[in-house]
Amino acid sequence: MQITDPVFTDADKAREHLEAINWPLGPVCPHCGERENVTRLKGKSHRPGLIQCNACAKNFTVTVGTVFERSKVPLNKWLLATYLISSSKKGISAKQIERMLGVTYKTAWFMMHRIREAMTSDDKSGFGSGGGIVEADETFIGKEPGKKKGPGFHHKMKVVALVDRNTGRSRAFVVDRVNRSTVTPIVLKNVDRSARLATDEGPHYRFVGKHMRDHKAVNHSAKEWARGNVHINTVEGYFSIFKRGMKGVYQHCGKKHLHRYMAEFDFRYSNRSATGCEDQDRAMRAVLGAVGKRLTYRNPDVGVSATA
Image 1 (cartoon, rainbow, N blue to C red):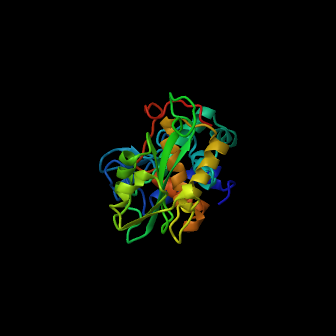
Image 2: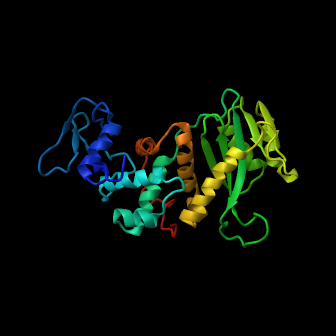
Image 3: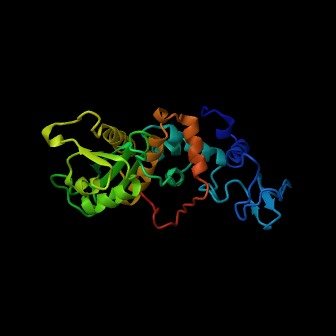
């Protein structure tokens, strides 16, 4: 699929494309779930794509109950923005979306946060099921609100990430501190007990490692980077992509929004070419992820930001 495709230039084609993705067997009422007793309204006074549910007497379109609902931005621009952010390995700035789509910066910025909401995974299955290797590591980026810059990483924002080496999936979490009390619940909640945990020598992994099938660590302080299949090179590769994107594309991100950017990088990493997912498939998965999610500008977790 190319950016000259009609679904990216024509609102009606975009709506038909979205209907084909979300309703492969025909329209489904988002209010009551009715599939059979629905009628398309084609009068001149009705907006394109409007459907009436004769079971609950409510009207709907394919955008109802999704992050696209009640947006004044044409649907073709939504699909183009979704494709661009899904296919850009290190992300794409809101300023670039503003220029390419011909919308305001405020609109582009909020569109991207809505798309990131759609990218947030609903999969809660444990990593490493069946004895697979799961790598865990932490990284530091930017600056914690209210903290003065100093030596070390105390003043930086902290991120803990897990990568399932077998499936290629990643999950990252923004934490206030990197210690046993924050790392333990993350690993226990997201890693299957049958998994083999691979970490560095950080003491915060020792306790939770005892709950796994196996726990091996490499000693970076002794310049040990790998010992057979014991290493954390995969998760460090994930962090390198994340940091190139945050520093080179987005440039700045407040802690308030960092979890949304982590969801974006997790989505692209977990659905990359190495896992058999190409650009068009990745964009379609993002569109499917928009169903059942809403993010309004008045949501206190959104607000106005200077993020690029």
